[in-house]
Image (cartoon, rainbow, N blue to C red; front, side, top):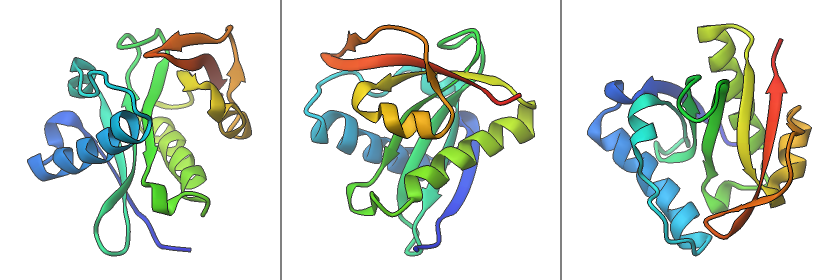
Length: 152
């Protein structure tokens, strides 16, 4: 398996190039690939930690956005979970979620995390310990489910 180098930074600590690469990947997936025109960049980016993984050739191929309590929910939240298409199916998405949990736990202790997951990813999030806590709802015309995990 490809060796991924993981890093997490607060928004203010990202370089312009790092933020560009993160937004480029997120837009390629959430706007273009999923054919969903919406405001991908929002004010929550400024309040978040951005975890990203670089491939061996230095390209950012995986990202998550970690939102502190009070930004989206009372709990921590994880969103904008994205993996470049050609790297899917190789276990990198699982590594991405483990790195996300590891960052939250090491910086803030064991916490509850609430997410708004795309419904088709229910099994992926279940595998990582998330439990469904609400009915399906549409967000930008895509079925979503609210889920929660408690790392304690």
